[in-house]
Amino acid sequence: MSDSASPPAAKGSFFTGFTKLCKGLAVVLFLGHVSIQLFPSAATYLALIPARTIPFGWNLVTAGYVEQTIPGVIVSIVGLLLFGKLLEPLWGAKELLQFIFIVNISTSFCVFVTAVILYYLTQQEIYLYTPLSGFYGVLSGFLVGIKQIIPDQELDLFLLKIKAKWIPSLVAFISVSVSFFLKESMFYLPIVLFGIYTSWIYLRYYQKRLEAGLKGDPSDEFSFSSFFPEFLRPILDPIASISYKLLCGRSEAKDALDELLPGSDSIMANRRRERGQRALEQRLAEKLAAIKSSEVAPLQEDASTKV
Image (tube, rainbow, N blue to C red; front, side, top):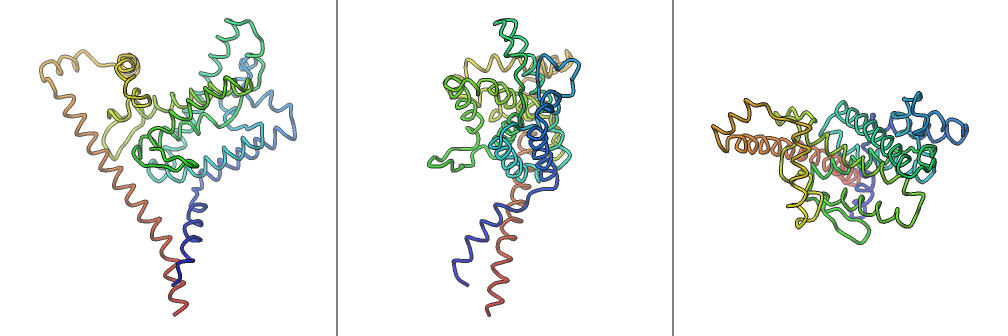
């Protein structure tokens, strides 16, 4: 068996194994782009135009699946297939679809509100009548999901190696920086930023993790301040505590119990985190083993053929 057979197998595994759900959504993104190119007026009904969102409220949903440019639809389809191949085996198809739907519509709603506020502050109608659309909010949310699952995994980005937990922060920083130089990108900046934030809200507080026996992810490694450099965390932690109280809340009975049993809440949280971490590690190990076996099988078959 020669070593030259190894690269094709690895290459093939990179471009295969895409899930049915992600391939179906990729078709939706492609058809959305084609419809805009063939019928430009369709953007009036499918893209997010804040001045027309009422009564065309459905564009809060459809805008996320309509790419207006060729580079945009290519990036969205490739990102959907690659990220979905990693996340769906761990979350399941139903949870991944729910994540996409929630992040998409919540991002669109936040962008709509932001555009209306900017219009009233500046009196510039461009904020109300610019068609906004794209899958970037969900793609940004996928990066947050990867940060949660494999935070310390180093990824190769061109000439740089960076841990997965810093990818969402890097994308946000680059998006903000580019918006200062390219005026067109400024309209898409809220989609990226709200995509990151709303996906973190969902994963932090609401996602049901049956294998871990808990709701959300209370670990310190996935806190709001973990998206920022360590020297900023003392400033950001109090802000994050406000969002926790608003989104989760705590009953008076629970507060009284915590006072009677100091440290009990942290102990239970640690136990839930440990169970969740073990479950995730087990599922990742099973997924990696399946990928390796799929790569080794063709090589063994070639070797037996040669013999």
